[in-house]
Amino acid sequence: MAETLSLNAEVRDDTGKGAARRARAQGLVPGVIYGGGEDPQPITVKYNELFKMLKAGKFMSTLLDLKMKGVDQRVICRGVQRDVVKDLPTHIDLLRLKRTSRIKIFIPVEFLNEEECAGIKKGGVLTVVRNEVELEVTAGDIPESLTIDLTDYDVGDAFTISDITLPEGAKSVIQGRDFVIGNISAPSSLRSADDEDEEDTADGEATSEEGEEAAAEDATEE
Picture: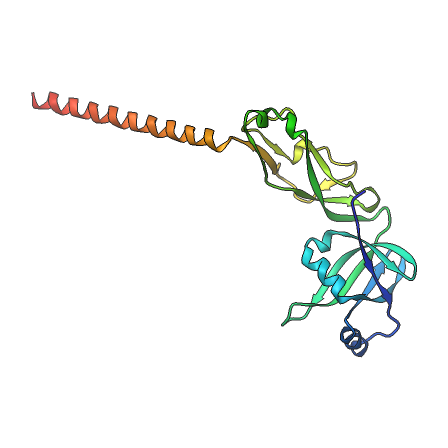
């Protein structure tokens, strides 16, 4: 299962604009939990705790273990309202998740057996294009990571999403193209040598062409 973040919340008994303003004055952010076949529940969360998670990134696609009244609930954020001037959070919407709920979430990619990789043994370098992939999965079957075995990849080889075995029922949010996850690139010394070879070849071709033109001119003059 994917790692989740813990978020503490308190039940909010009073609602409305006045109650929301009072909550913000106390360093709290008002919000609501909905879905899961239950009635919506107004809540508050600590501003500092929420702001830290938002700043870390990927908050909208991260599973949250909401701790409230001694009961843990699995939720995911589906909306954050912000102040139009300060861009700070003023309200949060959280969706309750059942085990069968379908959600979109970013899953990290893990690269295995770098020390056994054929291309890296030759001096190649692992270049990561995507260190995570957004998947659509059921909430009860979220993988902790996606893996790529690098053992048989050589210098110049690339690995794409089709090289990853996705969990049953999961699919990539990006559809219609076999996008690149990473590659084994040539070492900089080898790339430099190849560039020099190309320059030498180009210079040789240019010299040959100049010689042919000179010979043609001499023949014309005779």
